[in-house]
Image (cartoon, rainbow, N blue to C red; front, side, top):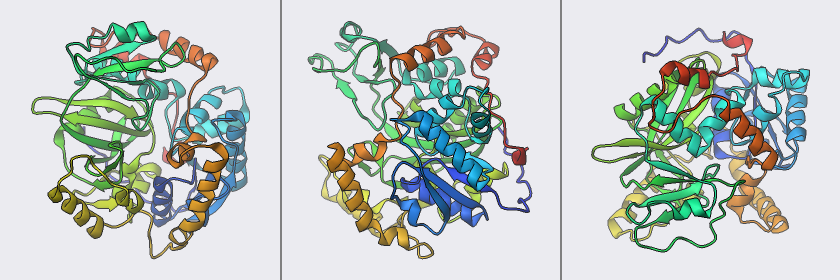
Length: 440
């Protein structure tokens, strides 16, 4: 797939709204957008968050938590759009599902405005990519390699898995950050207390051991405009990356472009987790939203241009960033002295995502923010990692699940690895979202 030539820079800055202001990717993207000459606004259910203190953000709006009050959150976004005369909404985390779901009814004039400005595909496509089972089926239609997979709706399905002969990963279809993942090894008892049921389906995937990578891309009209790849090196709890170094990987780039070809007309962000062995490259899950790959453009306006001008941006190989608090929490079972020294070299020689000499207050306010975060943790009786995401995560209830199943069941899908024409697959996934007028 070829990349397009950059378009001329807009003569006037755009007013851009980020759907939360609490994550490192939020402040990093806000700074990149400001470098590109745009005005950045954020909404967030927290009264105090890192973007609130950034000079890259014009204004922060408090909104209800979408996890608790999705209608109130969508209304809060609509009010912010009207007040700040927003031109583009860039979603940052799982609040993207709440926004897409709440704005899917085009009969609501206010929601229609938000939907047109939201840089994301329609709700159907988002769910297809986010749901690990549906994504596995989708990969089977694209011709991309994927792990063998089984859907589990109850414990009987779990007991019927071939775990006696095959190593498997068992995880919720709507899980995130390795939450609820069970490693099923041959000839070992099944784990107790797996929360599997009609309202919490699981997927069992063939466990593949190899090198792990993450990719992040921005798609415009189903074409890749921004692209980055980084290996999984330093993590917290073997899941969340805290160190990012851009590399070139032709196989992953081809894989992503093939998926983009199967998403005609899609506008949005899309990220994948990959595992590569000597003879296989597979994507094990997809995040159709912002991820830490954004950090590989820190300090440049290049990624911002991909959102606003349809200008291509490929992360420069060797570009590095880290999250210092996460790097300081690093621990790895069985790590030897050599691996520890390599970790310390990365820690001492890599720029932090949060710190900026041009924007000092977010770093200086960290003690205050941490105090605020831990007070929320105390009130909610949650650990900090759970609390930080809880406001924003999309966990569909019974009625939502039934609506989603009806939505996905009406498109004549085939089984993973089964036959199906490309034409039929494209009809399954034709997005509805259009560019805002300035992007045409």
